[in-house]
Image 1: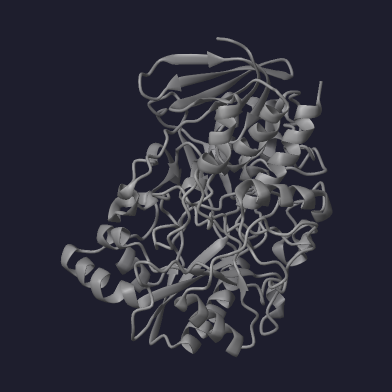
Image 2: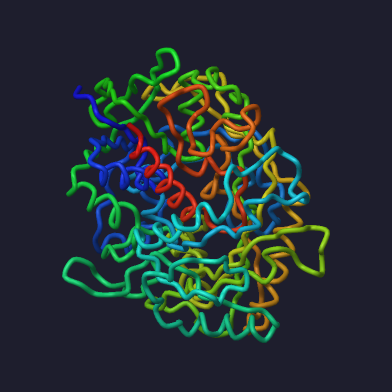
Length: 526
């Protein structure tokens, strides 16, 4: 195969950000993506368009879950979701990565998120730079993703040197209801910054305010995901993208990666690619899996942390049932955030930092039909879902050495990747922080007029992070400040696995901003 200047493994926020800088510098870049492109059209609006119901949510390489991760679920939650514990975890594989199906919320970490918090335990997690270092790249990432926001309304808003590149859409009636209720409770609701296009042009459709956004691919391409907003222009500028390519091993000689071995997902053909530089962005589960499968952690003085310190936020949704319809089909209402308790709640000061609360739609009807008996599902979908709206709580969880992705005994998958498993449990403090935020969310829903609230505990790994973390101490961090894999001269990691701690916001914008920073530095190297 022809040799490239750089090979990027993964096409999400991290891979897309680095590729953006390298292609702009005239580098010859090959991007290898395990999944395929997600078709866009009216089918994305259908019941089976939600990620969990699509072929892009795949168990081709399942991660067995060794520990009980649903121990906090209520009896009602278990009944409604038909699950007592996840036995294996699927992953999102597609061009653009999870960004294609995400909810578009694009929040910066706060300066204090970079300094640690004693209440979150002493895991040795140390950021090798501060907020000020990343701030200009946050602005660049917001510009690249076309984030629509309103600066200065979030009570924890960090300093910024540039305004949002676009303005948000008007509030829906449901969003106004939630914002007014929160204000009556003494809170300061703010507009969630969203990577959504609200301006019609010759090349882009404007958002039509549908409710199939979070967990759906945008049918008209108005959501500014990585595939639409970043990769398409890069392909026109010379990026070479190879989808349906499963990387199975990094090949090393001495202290360098000399190539990657891969399998064509459609034909089964064995492949090998070579380059001068390698950038790994396969996600907080896939990246450590590939590193461990390659045995490359043995070259790293902090190799023991590869796969460890898995964080995922301690998330739940408070759903409120209202006496009237609050979830109309053409009224997008993931618009309001609450950060009044981000750094703690005076009612429970011993818990320290808590995290954020974000407005959320009711459950996708397709998932309701998947999880409930047919007759009951039709009743819930027709009568209850239109009267429901929710608030997502996102508590920062403690980085723990025993929470990890690891290889295990068992058969390799169809591509030759060895079997892997996840071990993860929350601490009592994590659960208490989540419940403290849930209490506040339920207060807002009750103030807004909800007749009843139901708390649904989230067990997915959509915000997984921290498994190949960066830091200042080579013994406790696998990556240096520019995300070089210690002990290997030409390998960098740029996905959410790099994060020493997760803060209380979605990790996507931080991953994108850091990828632009790393890409800039890498492009400047001779």
